[in-house]
Amino acid sequence: MTKLNTFEQAVETYEPVLGLETHIELDTRTKMFCGCATAFGAEPNTQVCPVCLALPGALPVANRAAVEATIKIGLALNCRIAEWTRFARKNYFYPDMPKNFQTSQYEEPLCEEGFVEVVVEGETYRVEIERVHLEEDTGKTLHVGGATGRIHGATESLVDYNRAGIPLVEIVTKPVPGTGALAPEVARAYTAELRDIVRSLGVSDVRMEQGSLRCDVNLSLNRPGEEWGTRTETKNVNSLRSVERAVRYEVRRQSALLDSGERIFQETRHFHEATGETSPGRSKEEATDYRYFPEPDLAVMEPSREWVEELRASLPELPRKRRERLQAAWALGDKEMQSVVNADAVDLIEATIAAGAGAAGAVKWWLGELSRHANETGDELAALAVTPAQVAELQGMVDDGRLNDKLARQVIDGVLAGEGSPAEVAAARGLEVVSDTGALETAVDEAIAANPAVADKIRGGTHAAAGVLIGAVMKATKGQADAATVRQIILDKLS
Amino acid sequence: MSTISREEVAHLARLARLEVTDDELDAFAGQLDVILESMKTLADVDTDGVQPTSHAVPLVNVFREDQPQPSLPRDAVLAGGPDTAEDRFRVPRILDEEA
Image 1: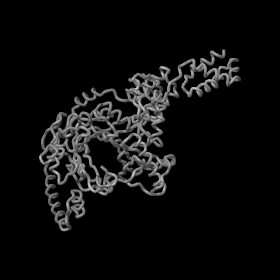
Image 2: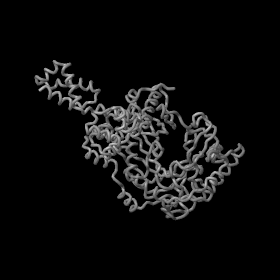
Image 3: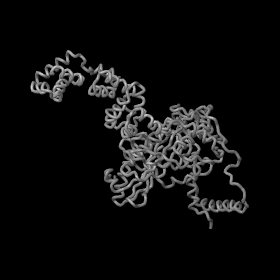
Image 4: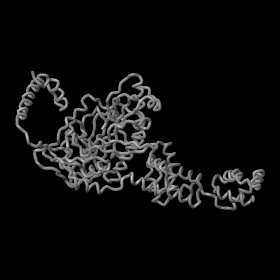
C-alpha cells in the first residue's frame, strides 16, 4: 500500500488535469431501440423483447424522443449539432449486454464542441465539452456466492435485462487543466451544473443515487511546465461528494507514486464510497479493442436545421438564468449566492420559500445550521432528514416569537433526529420562548438583586451593561426567553 | 508467408471468444489472407464521382415514436437462456469488472 501525500503537499508539486465522463439515463417512456417500457424497479426481465435481447431477425428503430432529448442536451451545453450522424456497434463480451455489443456512437456523435462554465471561489472555469453521444444502457448483474455481494469471490452472476437498451447519453469533457488545488471543487461544480442543466430540460431525473446520472473521473498529474501525465479513470462515482473525494484521493495517490519515481498506469479504477479510496479495476490487456463499426441495422440520422432550431426554441430557462433570477429575488450578493449553489441548496431554498418562509430565513437555515450538520455527518443537504416545509414551519415559529434562535436550533436537532415536525419537537421537548412577562419580570428582579453594581451602571446610563443581566435571565429561563424582550424589561425597570 | 500473422489470428480469436488450435491459426491466417486479397479487388473499381454510402438502404431519419409496446412474457424471455435463477439469467462468475 502506497503511503499517500496530503492533498496540500500534492498540489504544491503537481498540477492536476481533470476529465469527466458522465452517463445520463433518459426518462423516455420506452427504450432506445424498441418499445419496451422503462419503469424503474420493475420485476426482473419483464421489460425485454426480441430487439433488446437481440434475437435473430429483430430490428432496432431509434426512439425519436431520445434523439430530441440528446439534441436538447447538446444545445444546452453550447454544442454543435451534427448534420450527419450514425450509430456504431461497440463489441465486447460481457453478460450485461445480451447482444455481445452495445449500440453506441463512435466517430460521428450527435453533438460536439460545447462548454459549461462553473464558478468556484469567485473564479470562472470553462469546461470544454468534447462530445455528447447517444447509446443504450446495459443490464444489471447481481453477483452471488461471494461474501459481500461484490464481484470478487462471486461464484456466479444473475442478470436482469430490464435496463438493457434504455437510452443513455454520454457527455465527455476535454481535458481540464489549470484548476490546481480547486480540482476537486471544479469537478463537483461541473457535475452539479450538468445535472441541473439536464434536470431543467426535463429529459432525465438525473438521480445519482439511483444511477440515472453516473460519473467517471479522469485524472492525471504533471509538474508545472511538463507534459500532461498518464491518466487514470475512476468509475463508480455516484454522488457529488464522491466526485470531489475521488479527485482528491487520486491526486494524493498519484503524487505519492510520482514522488517515489514510479509511473502511473493508464487503468480503470473503482471508487469505494465507504473509504473514499480507489482501487484498480479490470486489466487493460485487451479492454480497448472494441472493434467499432457502423451499425448496419439503423438508418443514418441527418437532423435538419429546422428541427434543431425548433428544439432550441423549446429550451426552458437554464440554471444560470434561473440562478440570476433567484439571486435578485432573494436579494443575495454574488458570494452568498455562490455558497448557495456550491451547497447544492438552490432547490431546497426555493422550496422553503414556496412553503412560506422569507428568503433571508430560508437561506440562513440551509447555509447555516443545516450545512454545518451536513458537513458533520458527511451528507448532502438534500439527504438530511428535514424537508423544506419543516424548515419553513420552524422559521415561522421564530417569526411569531415562539422560538428564539437558540431554541430553534435545538428544535432542528430534534427534527433531524427523527422526533417529528418542528411543532411536535418543540412541544415534546418543552422548547418555547417564555412569553409570560410576569415570570420574566421575576427573573429580571432576581438578576438585578444578584448584580447590584451592574444595575447601578445601567441606572447611570451604561445600557451596554444590560448584557450581563440578560445573560443571567437567559440562564435562569434555560434560554427560553426572548433576549430583546428581556432587555426591554431591564431598561424599563432601571431608568 | 501470410500478411496476417498467427498472432493477429490468435488476437481476433480471443476477442471473438473462439478456441483455435495451433494448426488452425496457420490455416486461418492463410484463409484470411485470401479473403483480404479478394476484397482488395474492390479497390480497383473507379469510384470517382460516386458518393460514399454508409447503409445499403438510402433512408435517413427513421424514428419510432416513444410509445410503449408489450414486452415478451418472462417465461419466454428466460427460455432463451441456458440457465436461470431468481427470474434472472444465470451466468458463470465474471472476474474482471464490476457491473
